[in-house]
Structure formats: structure tokens, C-alpha cells
Image (tube, rainbow, N blue to C red; front, side):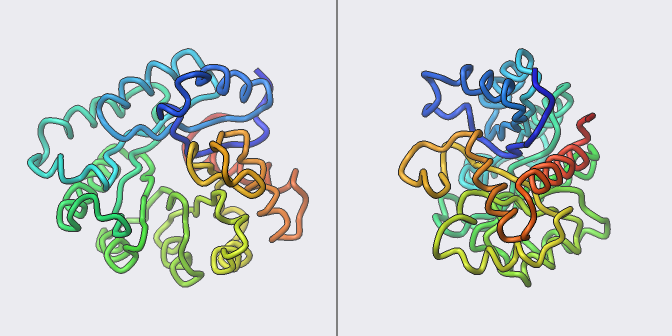
Length: 262
């Protein structure tokens, strides 16, 4: 395997969109020096992520319950699937809890259910000492106070950050890095690019959220981890640094946050 050059810290390769070429994508990434973190969102995916990573040394994974699915889990108070989650987090290549959080854009689950499931995963991250991968969409007024209410410094990342510089400052003060995805390349993303320009380079991670959020110039195509290079190129342009400097810095940030040896 080629030594790591860049890191896609958030992908969904277990999605059916990759049923025809999943292994090829991972193997091609390994040869190109690309590391990947798979985000597994339910018990079935937790098992599949562990099995897939066992045969691919450039693949790691996170385990959580997405806010869209929160309503199906509100009956749990610490037993059942949460006990299964805690056990699964002990996997050798598991590096974080999540993605977990709040999503008020689609509201596939009621806000109260989302908050309950998010709070339990926050607790699990603190109990296990693992980083927390936060999903926050149109829910900053609830998400930030929930995280702030914990009287401890967090370790984690705000996945697919899309807020303002003021939002970015609040998350970074709590200890969270900012996950930057394909939307940073979109023409109308001036607010996001402003936040990226102001944020310290050591607080940024590169992501794809594959198969979603393909960057320009691939907007209409299925997104893939290899496209994380477009994100790094845009960060480099915004920061007025070289691509190599941007990819090396964000790779180092990922290895540090997720406790992966260089």
C-alpha cells in the first residue's frame, strides 16, 4: 500500500451506489495513497464496516445512529442497540462515535427524538474516550448548547460543516475540527469559504460524504473518496497555499484526531 497522502475522513461506501465496485474503489484508493473513514449508521452497517475494514488497511470506520433514524431508537434508554453500539466500538479499526447529531432540514425524526439519541451518543463518546462525529444541519441553536452543556473539552469533528464563521468559532472553542466537503467548491458557498479562510489550517479535515455532495466539476456524478482531492485543492486556493501543503496538513489533522499511527 502506498503511504498516505490524503484522507477522506467521511464516506458511505456501504451505500448501494457502490454495490458494483466497492472493493475496487477501496483498493484503487490504497494504491493512490488515500485513506478513508467509513461512517456506519445502523447495526447492520456496523457489522459490515468492521468486516470490510478487516481486509483493507487504508479503511477505518465510525459507528453511530444518524438523526434521520432517531425515531426508531427512542424506546432505548441505554440498553439494546446502545449496548450493541458500545460493544461494537471496541473494534480494532473503529476510530469514533457517529455520525450523531441533529438535522432539522428534512426532520425525518422529531427534534425531541433526535436530541435524545444524540445525547446518548454524546455520553458514549465521553465514556469511551473516542472522538465524536457531529451531524448538524439547520440545528445550530440546539446542537451547540447541548455540546456546550458538557463541562469537558470535546474531541471530534463537525461533519460537512456548513455554518457561518460565528458557528465555526463556537465549535472550535468546544474542541471540534471542521469537516469540509464538496460544497466548498459550489459557486453559492461564499459563507462556507469565508469560514474556511478564517479557520486555522490545523482545525480542518477533508471529507466527501460519498456518494453525496460531489464537488465541482463532478456535481451531477456519483461522489467517490478520490474526489476529496478537489476539496483539498479548494482549501489550498482559499488559504493561498499549495495543494501538497493542504493535503499534508489535513492528513496530519485526521491522524491526530482519530489516533491513527503515521
